[in-house]
Image (tube, rainbow, N blue to C red; front, side, top):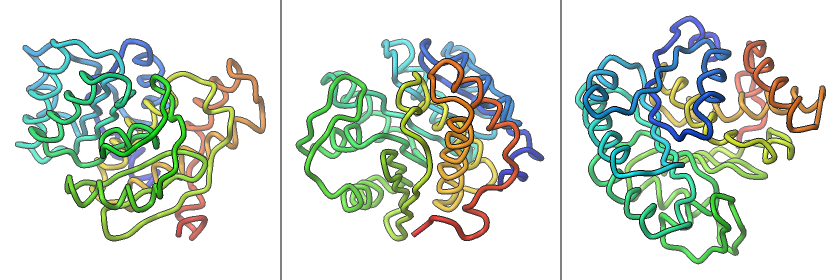
Length: 255
């Protein structure tokens, strides 16, 4: 599927946060996709309608961007364009959670790409999170992910020490990545837009699993060169550009 993404060169419309926009754009370019970072409500419907996938990220929320996300999401739905939602810091404030609830209610989201704390917040499950970090808690994440997928009718990808991808029926456990990835701002945000690129080829849980596996392997390859956050970031972008086949495609590490 990596090769299919590179051959398609999908246009990924990103409504994202200002902390990570540059990193996301460069990561998508390295993958072979074409990013467009447009959040003005006067144009988002047009952009979403012609894009191959839409990536929504609530990292730096404001009322204007929320309305743009809803408008873009609806336009994408009308054209059958896959939508990925990254609920950054879902449990940090009541406002963030209300925005996520609204998006999930008003937009047909294809995939929810989150960490454990964000999933727990969305599902109103007890969890101790700190800001946008995953935090910790005592809950069966596989079971919670399955419940969320069934409740909202979408694919859930929960990233952590073991990544979990499920459509509510099939559950994939993915063991890839490196701890240094947690030290670089925007790694999860870029993964969400990479997931959107894979969904532009095939709107399935398998596509999301391949995206997560590929991303983790890029992290492993980059960490083999440098475990320092600054140099790792450069090595990671290069790894995204050079990996042409992941272990996922040869029967590796999916359960």
